[in-house]
Image (cartoon, rainbow over all chains, first blue to last red; front, side):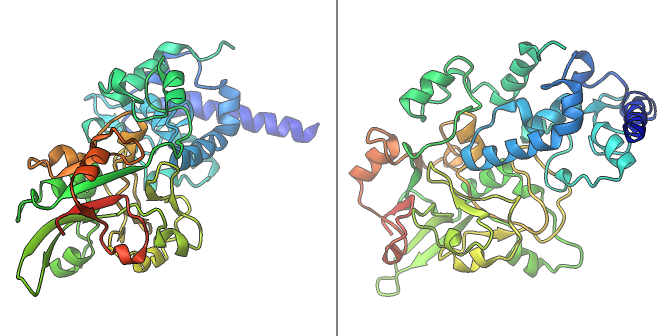
Length: 128
Length: 256
């Protein structure tokens, strides 16, 4: 029970980071500029996404590379496209920049974010 | 909690498609075509061996000194965004820089006849690179495309040594500018993948074919007797390079 309470507290503070700090102290991104900001839910319920987004991405990665399935629901490119924010000049801010969508939680938890050593951190437009 | 609404997904798809539209999925087997007709590409079903992608390159049309296909390939797959590593000499960079297509000149020593041709991954039916890969990162997709799963590539470069066509490149340094369709990073091997993002998003050509103003490159499904590439192969004499290795390459050449 105590452990559960501790976990809940951690979860709530994490939530605070995502909803509060993450948007207030952005690395250049303006709050509300991501496509995701205008939607009610992600491709899965929010709590499921928080817990399992890496499973989804990893599963999609394998079926995309080996079977050519590019269904966008769980694709990393889809995450970036929807969650990337723009700065005050309207330029996309890399999603792994400090305080941005991916980095906010990963920095806080100290979990290494390795996707973006290869993958694009913003929608690459005509250079797709 | 309501399920995700459709419009945002459609917007994303539209962006990915970039106007490919109704022509999508024509290269897919009939049954699959029907399934994906409603929302066109990107594809939602696994590739099958009902198709085998390949190319016929007419070397008589291939002009000496022309590198349009190489340039187009580099632009399509982000190879032109790679930078010379700090401290590397020009000569070293020229030798090691990643290239998916090289222009090769062949000279017949007896007759002196010179042939120019683009050389890229030959998409073998029995690829030596796949045989030697210790992590199964180098693999042959069901539709005949030989490619590297960079998630499992450990960068040992065994495949580079095994390839008789010198078709593979290695990424030696961190990549600063990254694209969505051709992700790459330090420590992985890569090579021509027949513009696999175009295949999966319903496109019917490759960047090199589109760029060739001489019409020397014909791309298509080798298993479809009515495809342009099958028709051309039936019509013109053509060979596999190093046919003696019995790899059954998917890329064939005329007049070599």
